[in-house]
Image (tube, rainbow, N blue to C red; front, side, top):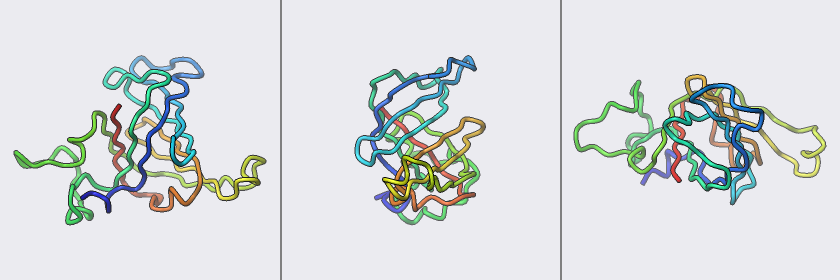
Amino acid sequence: MAEDNILFQDIFDVKDVNPNGKRFDRVSRVLARSENYEMELTLDINSELYPVEIAEKVSFVLASSLALDSSGVSDTRESWRERAPGEHDLSDEYEYVMYGKVYRYEDAAGTASNLASGQKVSVYASFGGLLMCLEGDFRHLQKITVGENIYLLMRK
């Protein structure tokens, strides 16, 4: 189905919300840990549209396209909202969707915690000013490249 579009997918347990206090009225910073790949996620979300509580589980996906079939992988549309009536895409299966760009891919080697684990990396993306940092083993993040436009999709 949309397997070619999926860059990363896992279920995250929300560990903390706004650990340094709430800085903006409608934005919350969420800290979460993945169940399957031991990834760490720091994500700014619009808490007015999609409130998240500590201990909730969320399905998290990063995708290069919202197309349900592989024919739409090279999708060059400017907006994910441009759909013909009756047309379905990956966003129909999720509650919260953001569109943004990967701006940094950082090798975290050299820190004490990474000497034991080996190849830990961090991927940074911006979704119109709402930021994301996804950290973990490079094997799970190797499909993501700097400068790439991506979709972030979440559901509880």
